[in-house]
Amino acid sequence: MPLSISPDQAVFAAIDFESAGVTKGDTDTPIQIGIAVMPGLDPAGVDSYVSYLHTSRPVTWQASQVHGITTADLTGAPTLLSLWPEVKTRLGGRLIVAHGAGTEKRFLRAFPLHGFGPWVDTLRLARRFWPGVRDYSLETLIAAGGLQAELDAACPERRFHDALYDAVASLLVLRHIIHHAGLTGVPMGKWLSQP
Image (tube, rainbow, N blue to C red; front, side, top):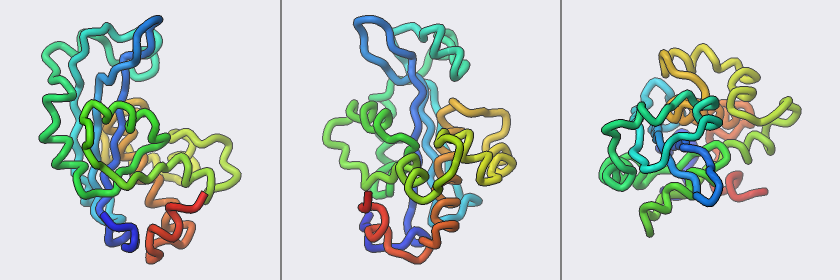
């Protein structure tokens, strides 16, 4: 998707992963994926997808304390690789949104040469356009923007550190930043590429 368009003309696809946690001598692995697609800046039009992911590793106690997912929850879950058609359909040709995009980019390496992007990192944008916030966690930004009720209505019975909840939260934070920074009609290339 070209960055010459304004945000109200774009289609955003937010992605979030939850992981099994790091164990000594092993790399981290994703155990839940959430994707939320938003046309323009209209959260009413959000189309969402969430799935647990199979892993051969058990979920660490520490990770489970954060997101509440246990090894038992993953029984019968598909592998990330088997979800390629779903992921490609939802992310292809869209601006990819993530809060602290490093983890999402790393886990998407399971699909070599996927070509998803350009990327919009809401953590980076919040630090730039939303000064004075106590911290830049999704939870703090959602509270600071008065977005909690809207997020809860969009994702009933979910909470922070659920992949779908965090993906939708990223979209709401992005929309808030765009509106409050006066970027609605500004081509994205003019403000996304700046430090």
